[in-house]
Length: 417
Image (cartoon, rainbow, N blue to C red; front, side):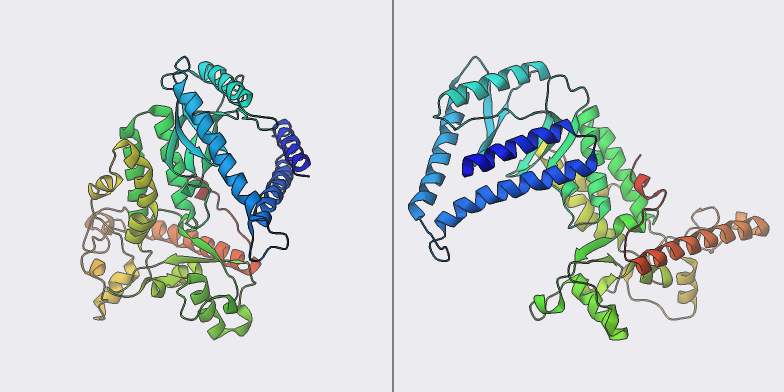
């Protein structure tokens, strides 16, 4: 039974390589091969479940683990001890291993990789087989089950495929800006091998976020709502917190179980819990006194994944952020609000540099002296910006009413140089 399942999965994976152009069929075949993989894995777990299993056989489960580890260690020793290959195993886990061929070209890597696969297969009894899958050139191994590289699956493949496993570019627990900036930074490193270009790109994106020029869609989180009864009492979950606020106004506004609830993080007074700074995107658009917490997005979301990746080559990403000028932008409504005598309590609002809303020059007068001499131009500029903001707000309201996502025309290019 297991042999038939594994052979069927191999057949499905080979079919995926033949139909790469058909995205719908690719997703269907990928789901099928994953289902076959889970069936084979569950069969192993079924034999080792001595407490809840119906047919437990701990000896079978233990022997599988032991023999698999023994086979892997024997393969690693064979590769490291064969001097003609000049290879070294840098990572081995469960049923796979990464072999480093220092200084080898793509053609040499494919040739040596096939020789290694044949040699390891010959040392094991049938049906144990080591399959040569792909070549990464270049590649970054971050930690266990977390790696990224330019993938070549065949020798005649001209353009590589960006392949990432376990890192933030393929995970959905952060905002889109994290995956976009991280992916573009890694691609710049792979293609240019110049860390100064990566530094310039990261600093440009940090300035965009600090200046408020980043798309709110790229800074919006979307976490799954599991139902009010699925959370433990007192749980600090943004999706649950927003649901409680929505239901306080309308009992019918509770999201469906499994639906993703969008939210952003705004600025607040010092000492306030982070869960209290969670807001819906439409609230930020409607309330001019709310500002996105750009410091949180940079220091807690965008820079940590970059730091984990680039510290492997001795680069401190946080030092790039510290070199930036600390300039923050506030809206005119916030200035008028202060002038009424009701000051806010955040320290960033007491020490904020003001910009002219027409020409973006630094000023402490609301509108700079140069623009005051041309009131008609200022009026037209501000009127155009107000129309653009109103159209963006109307678009987000339509998205909220429909319950699905819409990508703005320029949102996907926001984090490209």
